[in-house]
Length: 350
Image 1 (cartoon, rainbow, N blue to C red):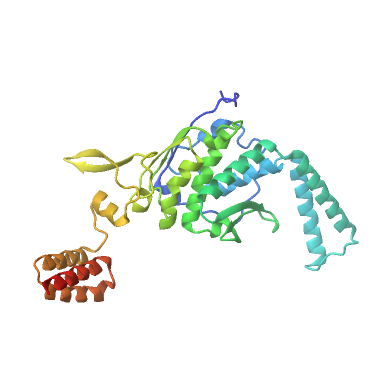
Image 2: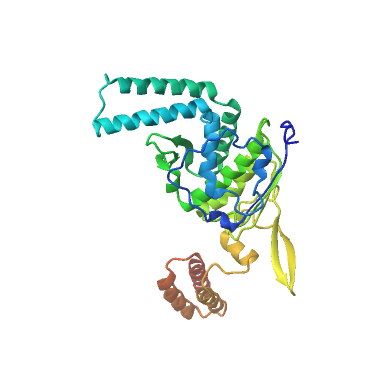
């Protein structure tokens, strides 16, 4: 089956919370190899160990770029080495000064660079270019404000650069949430394009992907969008995720998702299907579905006490408690509601 690339295979992968325990380096050694990911089953290696290869994401991405650009060809690697050697000779000879254009060594360098460009054009891989485009599409669609991934060799060292909020930065400079999400989405997409290299759209491949704490390190707005993005880009993947985020739960459309709450009851795990999180306020999800209040218990008790005083028509004391609590928490919707009730009752009393 490995040799029959026309058969689409499903991806099965698991990402634990340990996936965020990684560091994306600033520079990388050149490791382009002819045999990189030639076996489609390579994409299933360590797919179920929880962490995947997120700590190696940049290196794996660069290897895919090298395949797409023709960097793996022996001719290209030889020319790059020759160019590096000539540049070293010029740097030593001119000691930081700009080399003369008439220098025969400079002319040789220019010639080798032209040869390199031609070699890259001759050895680039359309198949791997298409795979790279799909990986980029997945990342740019789901990860907020991260676009235009590029391999930069201008300094003599290999770097992976991205645009972040319009600025060109090293991928290692992204926030931890962005790095975690780039590596996660990139890893899923890369595995799919390697697993199904001749698919018209490998991102539409089937599979099951388990993600623990899908909101890990993400800004609340990104938490709201992450599952929607995953379902949009990987439309035939069944995602099984855990979350403690009301921001994630409030944006899950029940038409396409089943929310299950697990709880312990009499030393047994109880499973309950939850149908009322979509579109709900985060406070209501905390209180109604997670069994916790969104306020400190002391503050919540004070607010309940105020409404009890209003119900008992002890309006003077209620107003005093409202004033005291307002000094601690400022303007609050519940306190405004309480004052509105008091004013209404006072008007009716008159």
